[in-house]
Length: 188
Image (cartoon, rainbow, N blue to C red; front, side, top):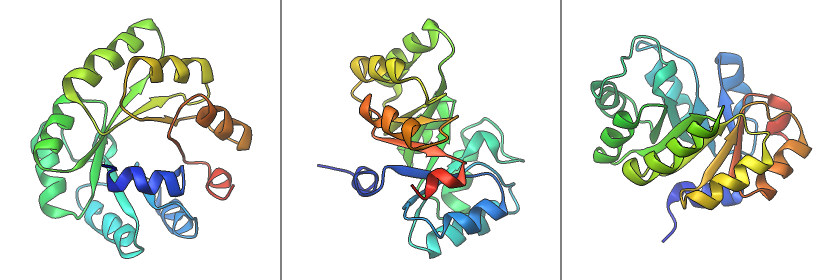
């Protein structure tokens, strides 16, 4: 059975990733139904999420980038309790585990800089079982293909995606979607 997030990605594989209020307003003009929130603080995150939810989109909060939240599980509880976010993004496996306990969608983000990162993706993917894995940078089709071969968890390619060719290369290599802060990519 497909999850809601998988269905949304099939309809539009481009995820808008926003890093400021200007990006928030602009992403609401796109066809993307999933928004990665890469900014905010404990005082503003609920309003940011609410703005996205009011537009009928799924809101995913990058916990590591919200000022005032720690890297402890209580941060996930805060997001669940005080915002209407659909899920979280993080580089921390413990936060993914807590989010899954709270029935939030989860994205485990990896910076693929060497072969050890590939080993961690395989190992942590099996242990933590996030809903999605995001790899950065996302402009490495050979690496995306390799990762798709070592895990069954759907892959998002993010970081340095700048044009249609980057999007098509990532999707052709096996990524289910791409995430980008580049507004021109949102409207391809």
